[in-house]
Length: 247
Image (cartoon, rainbow, N blue to C red; front, side):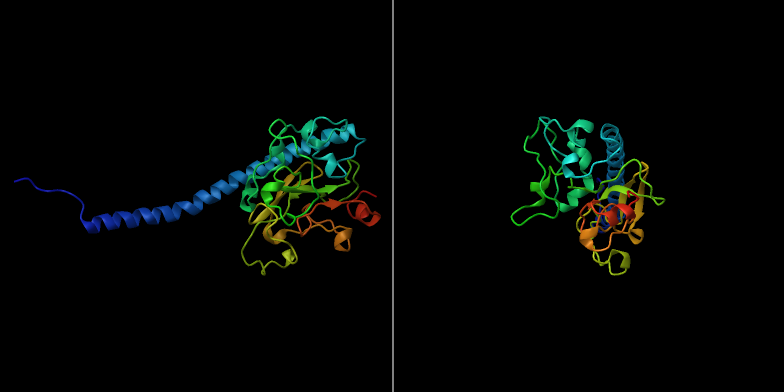
């Protein structure tokens, strides 16, 4: 007589339970590793933008971009040399891969699509979705417009950063985030920031100080380039220029 072999129902259930337990342990670690990789890509984007800004300043009397058209004209048929496509030749440098949490798709470079002219800064207008904004310069990052290489500030000057954070949790325990839109940015627990000296730092959630310009009331240079609503800063008034060391 041959002896029948096989798993009992109890053994199968135990194996399934063990596999489920291991998957539960591994998934958060995998998710965290993927976000770290996206943050690294974001840092690399900022470093490329820093190099492009330096080259732009060399060609524009030591002035960094002072407005949106200096960043992203979106066409090579122009006598004016914007950051893209003249100093950066791939549009995806303006895109943090964590922006996918907002449903934002990677932008297309020239040759893939021609209608890349910029729209106004801000959140999607009525009738638009984030995918309609995939080719815009402000899709992932905020900027401080109007800086120069002759900046006189003795404090670190933010030049480009994530537009803000993307966090759907209760943030009432973070008074520094009061009044901010927590769904304009890329990362959940902080913001990548490029400073005018070329350094790139990660600012944790509890340490974020948003910048303000005249539209927000009294100008304030924070430690990130973004305003609380995710918009960029434009230094076009004396008080703003003084605050940022550009007077």
